[in-house]
Length: 430
Image 1: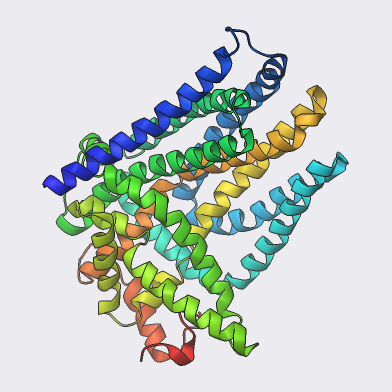
Image 2: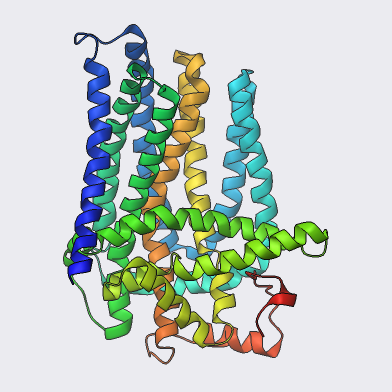
């Protein structure tokens, strides 16, 4: 209990320090030089702040719309997000290229490249969509039993909007400091981490409500679970927010390295080594841990280990969760919102100050992505609870036969889904 309390206090202290220093940085920068704001800062404040506020409000609106649509039409939305993200990123990229500025052209080319990769990914995961939709439908069923389950998400989005407004002041104020690019990079990382903490607080709140319903049949109080996530579990949320995004990125790299098998001996050896390292990392830190953090109050590393052990108890479960595309769908939903924000903000900025186009477009994309990811914590948490709680008690009467039928299909060899291995097949443990 002492270690958990110490971790929670440390998490709250880190969060307060990060937010306080960013705000202090902005205020100091704006009042520097005898209380007068420089002409450059006035111009940046005039042309940055309205677009940032507009992007924040638009992303919140889109976030609510996506979440509501996923809860009402989960199967349709999986297909819709995959291809709508392609259309939106492609449109945003083409729009930025049309302005014929070097910076906007570079950003536009990156968006078009992502759109092409997104289309290839959508084709590649087509065999997985059916099962993913079934799991999403089943996992969202308990949500109707808790009418106030979305309230923590509303609070986190509201705090996120206020934090974005303060953060842009810090960015403007950083222009009065030495090494301005370095300060801005640190502020961007701080914003990303803070938004991830908000998302994981919402994730842990929803996970506790749903996990206790599955494991004990309890109708938990959402407000109490929210307070618990902001106190006892905040340390794990802060710690996990540092590592889970990096781990998810490395997971994508690992999947790409799998494609090198047999192509080149040296590259294959490197890929094989990296994949075994990745396998160890996933065991000690993964996004599935938030379910046990919420349900049992475990620390992040212990929860990651024990959750992965649950998956390994039954043959085939690791392959199922490893092939799950829910996190990818949530990621693409954020990208879709970000691209839509880029289209609106870029069109606006083109009429007021074209030289800020690339910077404001990137900022709008970033804000749209982060705010949407906070809202998508609810469906993501529900899917996580479905997998983890089923692995803990497969005979629970609250679960249908979706997982058992999938495992039976895999055992019979009739499953066309090719799971993504963490190590090449020839070296996989038998």
